[in-house]
Length: 212
Image 1 (cartoon, rainbow, N blue to C red):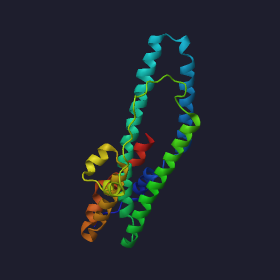
Image 2 (tube, rainbow, N blue to C red):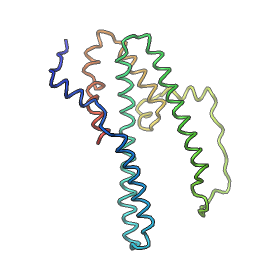
Image 3 (cartoon, one colour):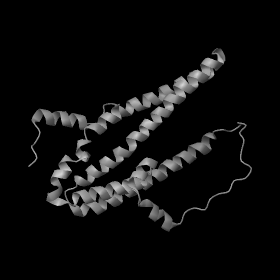
């Protein structure tokens, strides 16, 4: 049998799993500071030499922004995978797995639709790029939307590693749920694997990675 951790180790483990304090507040403060610094830098370009201005723009803001965006993408895929697998393993009744799977996929589709709707709304409201002299293509050919059959088939990945590398979240969600169901279906013979797998080992690491 797997030995139970001591009380002190259990307390440390619970603290590691707890969400970082004031995470939402810190994110909002960071966003506000980013807008303020970028605005001040933009409107002070006339008082800064062109070389220094473009150096700061390219090697501080642009470089830092690209690295930060890549780090966000680094966190998203393992966070979704490990969270869903751990969630499936924590379900006591196997009869609830189907319901949880449907709810998870439905929630993802609904939140994606809301995000797209909000993005289109604010784009139409703010009209970014209005008045800018941008070179537009001579002709635009719209592609045909995929059929319902193609949409359903594309949900199931042929290569889960490729889906993770490409950031295809819907395929990652489906694979994570299937992997969790398969791991849970091993029953008592798979208990040591479930307890000692990378899934549970990663639990203390995920909150730390996000907080960094």
